[in-house]
Amino acid sequence: SATSITSPGATATAQPLPKGVVLDKDGKPCRSCSSGAAFAAWASQAKKMKGTATATATATATTATTTTTTPPTTRKRTDCPADVETLGRSTWTLLHSIAATYPRTPTQSQQNDLTSFIRLFSKFYPCWVCAEDFQEYIEKEKIKAGSRDEFGNWLCEAHNEVNRKLGKPTFDCSRWQERWKTGWKD
Ligand code: FAD
Image 1 (cartoon, protein in one colour):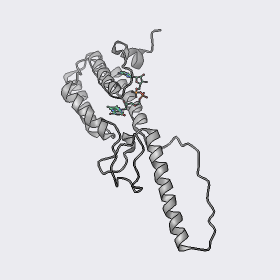
Image 2 (cartoon, rainbow, N blue to C red):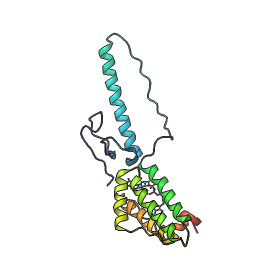
Image 3 (spheres, rainbow, N blue to C red):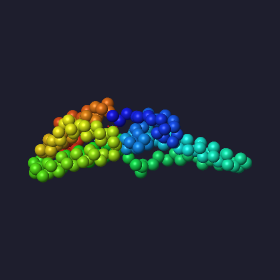
Image 4 (cartoon, rainbow, N blue to C red):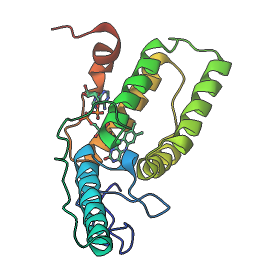
């Protein structure tokens, strides 16, 4: 599951990782597996440690110089690599939109292609903890691609499984087309 994993020596700082930081398989913090807030906390911790190390090195090398410190930038950028939430929201948008435009009566070839696409997608999803759970889910709950409504409902249930895991409210799957195709009736 996507809980934080703490590993001594996983960061250059050797400090405990902030809550919610998930490590990648190489032991480094995984941005696309961690919440934006958790990753930002880790980045700030790492920056401070780096600053401390640099300051110590400077002080050792030059005993009689005065250092000027640049105030840290507080501007929040919006063009950063995806964290687990932005990646998730964008991906669900793509997947549900694919469901919304999938044929009502797909050919056998379209059904095979969609099934392959979901299987392959599950292998390449950038958040590895999410991907592993999703792979398990599709082993347990066979992908249903027999029609638009069948796939839309299957996907809605798959999304609800993740919602439950994260403690979020589940979505009423009888309304998936309203959310992703027709717009709300009320
Ligand atoms: P999202 O869950 O991203 O949903 C976007 C919108 O979809 C919602 O605003 C709502 O209008 C609609 N919606 C919600 N539920 C449904 C539904 N059942 N059917 C149709 N529409 C719906 N994050 C983790 O932290 N750990 C994980 O293990 C994890 N696994 C993931 C696996 C996959 C395959 C994907 C695509 C994402 C995963 N995520 C995971 C990300 C997570 O699901 C959310 O995308 C993220 O937390 C942002 O949530 P959100 O509240 O903005 O809404």
